Length: 386
Image (cartoon, rainbow, N blue to C red; front, top):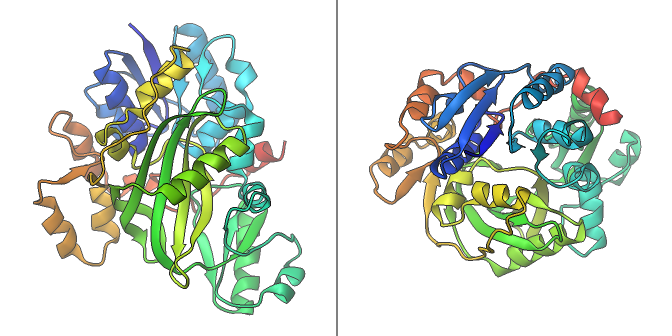
């Protein structure tokens, strides 16, 4: 039996991976830093491990995983959290004699992970992006900002939120706070939300697309956008072509999500970022007919996975806990729950316990990837600098 270690079991994406590979009769070990992680309670999880927090103790986390893979014969490790992917990509050589890790190599990964580098590459290749101020000198940035609001975001940390600044004093205060927490930041114009699209893809080792879906966000965590709580599969040639061309340009392999926002002012499509990992709405991609986790496993096993660039349109899927927590119109969420055409990221009659756990530990579940990290750790910052 094939044996896979799936990390970050608290995340919705990891649960989708566990369910997907478990249905293919693989033996799944699920790992997390917390005992309440939803993936630990899936019926498809054969073994559970609790490891050191990769964001607060990255060295201990890596040493623990290395001990595990030396002792047991795993085919591969599949991570979902951006930081975990970062660590395993950076220290790929340490694990390479014992287990397969997800592509790409760290140099390619970092071009997508580092927002500043990515936006520079995108602009050089004619991709429309928010106006970005690349200087590291705040006075220089302030002197060149022509219109507010602007947004401050971390260049090298994902899922840590943004700061929207309406005035120069807001910018100065928030920039200083963000730099202190997260290190280098970029400043961009604020894009009024006219709609959000994600292009979700798997590329082979020759940077050719193997699998694809596109999702349109219907409801999100925040009024300005952010992670989706309800989304639908759609076809969109423009954002698909831009995303595939950009991923090919940076020589991508493995899975990635390319995020776009429609500028409400002129209806143009703007690149926001690339998430170089599995996405929170992975279950929707699977429901639309594209089994990304299994295709990635086949790629890593060099089994020449079949290309699947077709998917079902109009499939809807919800992150119910996020919808209930953040949506101001609770009636919409309640009405959707009784509609038969809505699927769910976590809730499943076939695998019910993770759904129960997610609500039972609702407050702890705020550590999901879509919530702000209030205490980014110094240890990880130091690893990023190396």
